[in-house]
Every structure is written in structure tokens, then in C-alpha cells.
Length: 136
Image: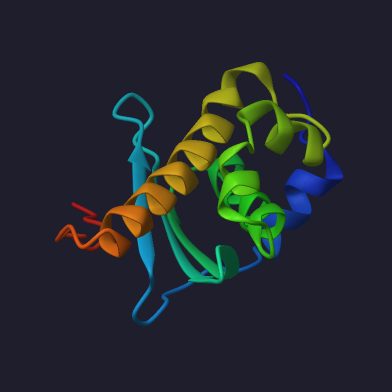
């Protein structure tokens, strides 16, 4: 069994940017039906930069740590920079994830990408329904 890095444990125990955001500019969700992890990322955008970001994650410690880290990485970035955050970059920032938990970092980058796409669709005037994270 691989041990979790100190960084993973820190972000799991003290997640950054967790919680609700009122009137987000974009919301993205991603889930993994196999493990049951669900991630939702909400962003505020000003002048093409992510000025605020929050997450809600229902899942394992790795999923929570990934959500926390990806929000830390994306805050202050331009939308294009944030879109380039890969699952490998997130895992590297966390000093690695166990191989069976790498899918969690994929969830984070996909949820962020979905939030940015949601923001761009809204900005383009497309009505996009963003349902709240469903926990059944």
C-alpha cells in the first residue's frame, strides 16, 4: 500500500476553498460512477482571470485533496492557463498520488474544465442549467 504524501494529507485535513459560492460565473461537475466520487467546482471570473474558486466534493481523501489543490493552482490564472492544468500537474503538486487514486486528479481537472466551459457558454448568452450537486 502506498502512503499518502504530507501534501495530500494536509489538503485532505485542511482543504482550501471548500464550500458554496453565491452567484458563480461558472459551475462544473464531474463524477466517477465506479468509485462514487463527485466533484463540483464554482468559479468567479473577472477580466478573463479566475478571481475566486470554490469546490464541493463528495468522495475519498484523495478526491478532497485534489479538489483543494486544483483550486489553489487555478486561482489567479487566466482561463487558458487554468484549462491547461492536467491531472499529472495536480498529482505532481501533491507530491504524488497512489496509482489507484490517479483517477481523482482526472476528476479535478475535468470539473475545472467544465466550470470554464459553463462560464464561456453563459457569457456567450447560452442558458445553461447548473443543478446543485446531488447526493443520494
